[in-house]
Amino acid sequence: MNPLESKQTYQQYVEQKSPNSPILKNCFNAFWVGGLICTLGQIISNICKERGFDIATSGTIVSIILIGIAAFLTGLNLFNKIGKFAGAGSLIPITGFANSIVSPAMEYKSEGYVMGVGGKMFTVAGPVLVFGISASILIGIIYMIFATESITLV
Amino acid sequence: MKKLGNQTYSFDSPPTIVDCASIVGPKEAQGPLGKYFDLCIDDEFWGEKTWEKAESKIIKETVNTVIAKSGISSAQIDCCFAGDLLNQCISSSFGLRELSIPFFGVFGACSTFVESMSLAAICTESFAENTLCATSSHFCSAEKQFRFPLELGNQRPQSSQWTVTGAGSAILSKTGSGPYITMITPGKIVDMGIKDGNNMGAAMAPAFCDTLTTHFLDSGRNPSYYDAIISGDLGYVGKEIVLDIMASKGYNIKSNYNDCGILIFDKLKQDTHSGGSGCGCCASVFSGYLFKELRARKMKRILLIATGALMNSTSSQQGESIPGIAHAISIEI
Image (cartoon, rainbow over all chains, first blue to last red; front, side):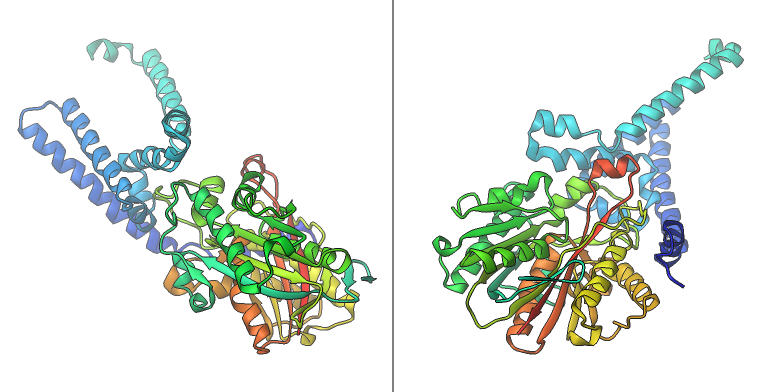
């Protein structure tokens, strides 16, 4: 067989020839590390509630603490190692979001604080913010149309 | 100089590679070829404030080293060819700005080293007494320009390659006792429609095979003529593809073919996935390892084919495929 017969056959051939990521191992690591991060969040949340904070405030405190830890570990050159090991496990929780803002901020510091840190800080997180906020506005509109009663209750 | 076949040129008075020098980063120093390099730096910054400055310093010091080793002063060098991966080739132009040698900036992505050597060889045979070539790459500055911030916690695909931190430099001369550059085969751009920037080996392998078969047809040589056929940096994925394509064309190169990206790192210990890449990979492996083997006459004839992926981060975001290129030089002693 000649892999270079046409562009299509070559692409199919390359697809077949390229090594796959170890999906089972990656899923397992993502599962337990992600679970561990969420458990940590739940513990913080429970402690807050026991100290008398309401659910909303407890949630905010959890986010602040997890973001703080993730940003700190990014600065110590540790979060990328956790991310490499756990993949989506550390990326999907709010820790991944913190890392995606702190890492370009560190990287582009050499271009100055305004155009470097300020300008490039959201290069990775930017799309998440744009589409995350857009989605929440859309859901908000749907919610407003179909469940006006419950809004007034809130 | 005369033309053989379609695109191969053989030199009537082959230029000599007088000397080579290489400087690499800490990860390359821990690799299997660590002991062959002239200098291994301890950290990626090498006392500089930015990675870009560090890369310029690496190429500058590599050039200074080769000038010192060869005994040919910079005033005796008629022109230099240099390039790298950063936008507008700033590592080489900033690194060599104090050198005061007529300067040609060259870009051929990871094929730049052999492209520079080919151009330098042509000049050396025609008008120049001595010429210099140098290329560099830096893992951190390349990641910053082409991929993600270093501290981002993501996973690299298995087919991705690791940009080498390092530089290689060579001085070519009209007179000398070898190793000689006897032939060059400049490559054509070949694009087989691969779009995955994390699978450069697959994107460049067709260009490599095109140049290699053309070289065999033009020169009348066969694979067994060479002690080693070395590709620039196709990595493990590219090497597998090359062996398949060449077999389908009726060439068996299994026994004497290898790749700079495979030679420079230990895949299992260093977690470099498909192997090394970057302008500094082929440059440092040739300058550090292959040149010394040639000089010691452990190898007598090698065909060095550096491959390049001719894309940038904008073209890949716009969904363009990755055109590949491969330039070959035959080096004999």
